[in-house]
Length: 339
Image 1 (cartoon, one colour):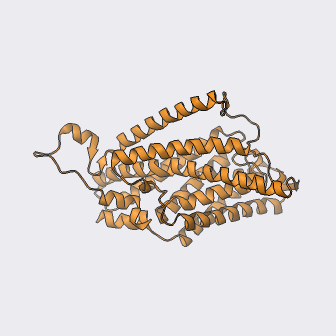
Image 2 (cartoon, helix red, strand yellow; image 1 turned 30 degrees about the horizontal axis):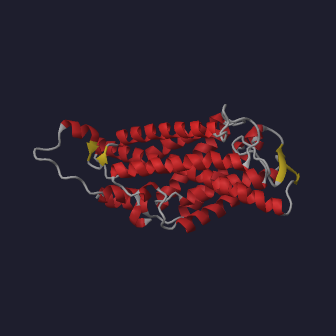
Image 3 (cartoon, helix red, strand yellow; image 1 turned 180 degrees about the vertical axis):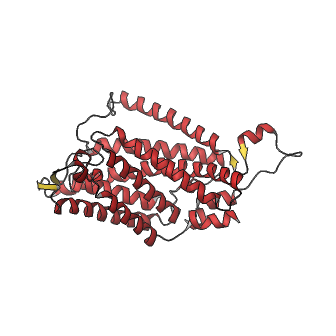
């Protein structure tokens, strides 16, 4: 995605010719040097998302495809997970496409371009399963997780494994595109403009990106507080993994590595090892397990993400991102756009 990176878009987007005598005061309120001001863009995006999701939820309830009183504490089924993630993802994709037309940018700008999608996503899948397995292995070897039995055999293992993988691919696509797609790009664009105006620094785009990344990660972590069985360590780990995924976006200019890692991490926990994932249990999992000992160490009802052992695992993942993913769109284009 070297040619389609978000910062490159900001640098190469054609600007309208100024009117004789300079732009009007009203135009200055709505339009800046790089197009529609970020604050207005975010407001329009939020309004379109809220309206679209409300309309879709009403339709789904009338079709009895959506629980009338919201989620319950029962185990999640593959079908419910797929519907609950696929439809909001389509809405997010549609609204992002609308915003790309309003702002006259390529939709690939927001992180899901087709360049290098397979290799990045595959690498993310491999690392997601590997590090989720490492965390479970540590808990098992320290006696904090007990593996009771195997629950699925033969064709059922393949069937439910595939169903859950598909569901979690859309979990990854929805959460990455919603939080670290248009929102992150636009917020970083607005903050970069503020930094450039206040400090006249050539690092304004990098500062804008990482300030936005921290803000989005805080929001992402707090967003998990409604999950049943969530814990303070679980909320912290959700926020930290968001920062790791922002780092992968910074290195590659693409969300695909994060999508793959996110999907594989959740799949391994929920299906393969049968542990809670941010407090949520999945039906039809491969192994039956349960935590033992202090919640701070075992994760308790939160699952492995609620254990303090997740923190060094996240540090290892960040090192993998830094040393295995090449610098491309976001980071390399910052210098070009700032000069």
